[in-house]
Image (cartoon, rainbow, N blue to C red; front, side, top):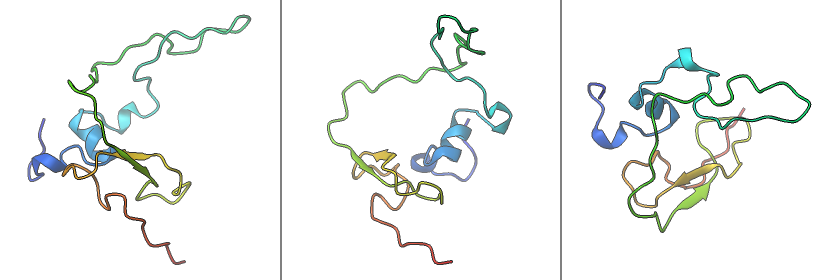
Length: 106
């Protein structure tokens, strides 16, 4: 469901907006989204293993040939880890579009 006042290209920009666009909220925090059955011999079954989600993410029809990777934005812990991926030039990408951000002053 589209939230009022949010442009189409910003609807799923960033993890909070993406969760809202998928209809997820904090009540689901810690829930299994999708997990294959896991069993380690000699140990109990992993709780939630084999559970399935109420939605499915499907890959694009054609592979993305160009993508970029850089530090995450809007966080303080492990902010320099290259765990943010985006398609260069795509208008749905959260700012700063891969530009290094200034260090926070304390």
